[in-house]
Figure 1: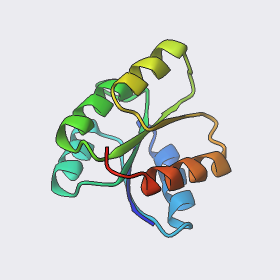
Figure 2 (figure 1 turned 30 degrees about the vertical axis):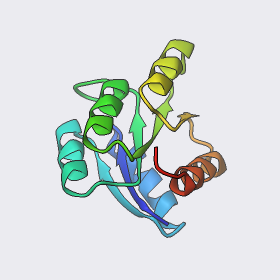
Figure 3 (figure 1 turned 180 degrees about the horizontal axis):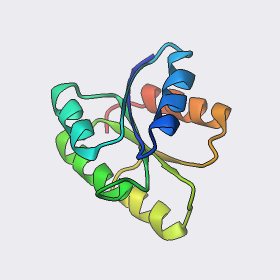
Length: 122
């Protein structure tokens, strides 16, 4: 179990992930606005952040970079419906823990979150 932040520009997508992860006993905070998500991480560092690549104001990769500046120990899982090798490489270089492709495979996401929660300090 762990504290998880979900940031997706589509509220329903974030709420679906929240329901899925809360069934596994996790505490999940969902955001659609980048600034609100960053403020939450500053106040309550989370163990895992799940970020959509496409957000409202900045890219998920830029958000990953901001989160790592604030909370280097946070494990970040990127979500995308538009996978490219360039985006995956860039996210990995910036410290993404893992990557999921939409539509989300429930078991795949649960396994990646469990792995991120078990991982030791960076």
